[in-house]
Amino acid sequence: MIMSIACTPATSVIEINATRITPLKALEMMETYDNLIIIDVRNPWEFEEGHIPGAINLPQGYILEQAFMLIPDFDQLILVYCRSGIRSADASKVLAGLGFKNVYDFGGILDWVGDIVTFTEFE
Image (tube, rainbow, N blue to C red; front, side, top):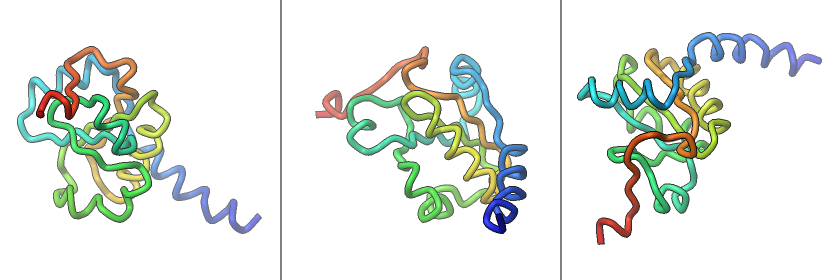
């Protein structure tokens, strides 16, 4: 019971700060803003199979350890995605809970409407 009470306030705060947008809106933001970060929270092998151009791979399990190194500005515009939208929703809430103010979850690459690149294209 105590654990449930301790976790509830953090969850409520995090959910308030995470914003869900459509992949189409994310694409529009990518075309409009130069200074944004696109974060793919899938595993590295998934990222290599295909990712959105310009995205950085920050697997969901490493967000707490690496977010501050990769994103030093708390006002940075951050777009987050994964495969289907489940991990990106969780990761967006974590980022918002860490104090990042402009976090947008646009779901999964399965619903992506723009270009996708793979590491084989760079070889």
